[in-house]
Length: 107
Image 1 (cartoon, rainbow, N blue to C red):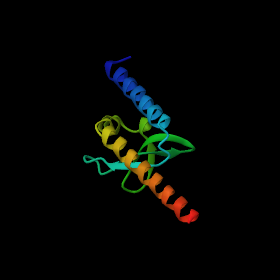
Image 2: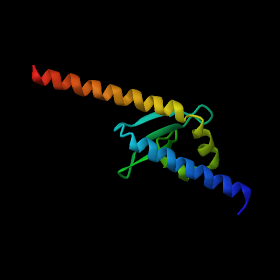
Image 3: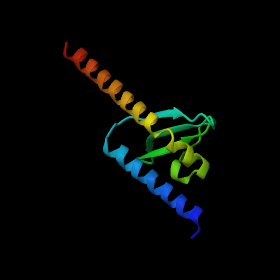
Image 4: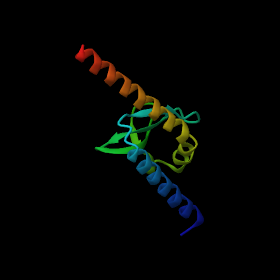
């Protein structure tokens, strides 16, 4: 196996670990951020009932990140902190909306 293949395998393992860690946090929401270099979106959401990191192209097509080109996989790693913040914000907003609705129904 070549050095490049070894690095690609390590990158896929890192993607799998991040997906697992994010899924374990049970945000329960989808969030996305724009990748500056490509104009695509890095998305964490459900794909076929599984929480996945994905790339959404400008035409709306969605691909699991681990199946994307090396260029996308490497670029996405630079945006994980930003995506995590977006997920936290989306989850907080979702909880607040839920509580407001619950209170409104109770009144």
